[in-house]
Image 1 (cartoon, one colour):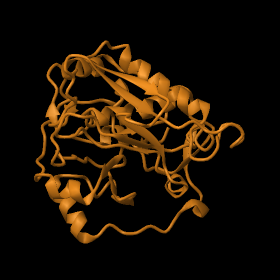
Image 2: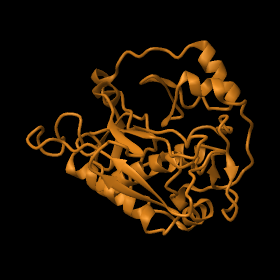
Image 3: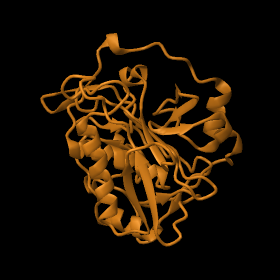
Image 4: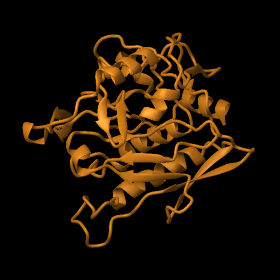
Length: 287
């Protein structure tokens, strides 16, 4: 399968192969300014193999990292990192020994849509099932953090909101950020609502994507940070630390492989990637 970036690739599923979207789905987009491009480069982000996009109130960088101008202003210059397996950010979630992170996602209104598409700005039963599976995967690890889906956005730690139709049409599948300096998880995951209807993903495939974005929210960087070509193909591309840290997690091996199928690889084929042994080591070390 062609690899999908987390997650700006535009594709259709047919005969078990992902293809580029047709031209009528391509939208005219604003161009990221040279000043912002220079700042991203200085911070160590890859702006060549994965071009930044104007997104929401800021920018979508390296496929699924959401940054605002305020984020860029406070970040320190990036550095290149060594060849290791698992990475975390400088800021992590404060657990107090046992922290329950609540997650809210709006459900599609009954009758508001047909089949798998769902209605309005909510998510289909299949998407909610994917979120529940992602949550159960984390909770099965018996960490100092756990996740709980709640039915109200009021005071939820993480709110999963649906991407705009324009972003869905241009192929954005998901985005998230990193923990705050005060020790809270990043508060929002933006997810496409057409992972079933347009891309044909299974519940397990959807769970893998959501779990990946949840991983960013609690401080995980991409497993193949030092060379995105391992999972994405193309030329060697080192992401740098992006000004938020890329700290090797002890106990994880040097070098990353696509065959290990870590849930935090930079690119995916849309399939199921439950936590592997090294992923579990990294989760248990941090939390």
